[in-house]
Image 1: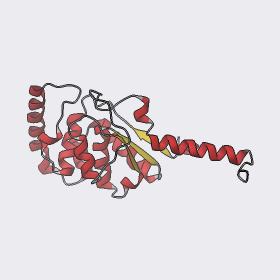
Image 2: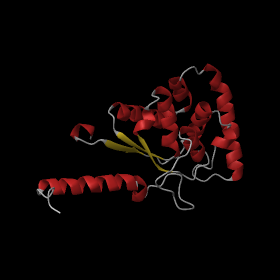
Image 3: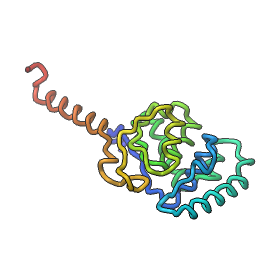
Image 4: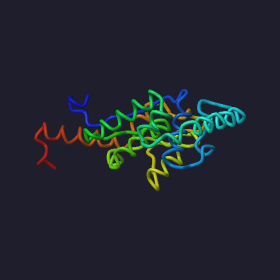
Length: 193
């Protein structure tokens, strides 16, 4: 798409099985305690969340002492999907594209990318703040005061697959303005009132 003139790309992820990886990466890069990073994911009970926290604390203890770089943190905790997202976000920033970050998992991938490329936030727009427990905390860590463009309705899944969440108003407005300007330019209307 970039080679065909696209300068905006959005990343989203359903989060099935990836909230655990995202929580560990969040803990590693933010130093926020694991229990504050872990949420219900796709619908765990309170007991399920407690068990998830125990499992993630054990995984943390097993790996954290050997991690000396963001890439090693990604290799230890990230999984294939988050690794792919991190690489794609880095490449999009390298191409100076506008990057739409959608949801908890992608924001965790952005944490890794940010550790590797400090200016990456210059290219990012956050599409929404999900209902996953750690998402607001990551956003607060990345940007002291985040004003997300889309808030999911109550009981929405952690990342909303609805078209409105993939089309943040600022992007829609920008495309509309560019389209109108192109129409005026193409019809020689620029000097008319």
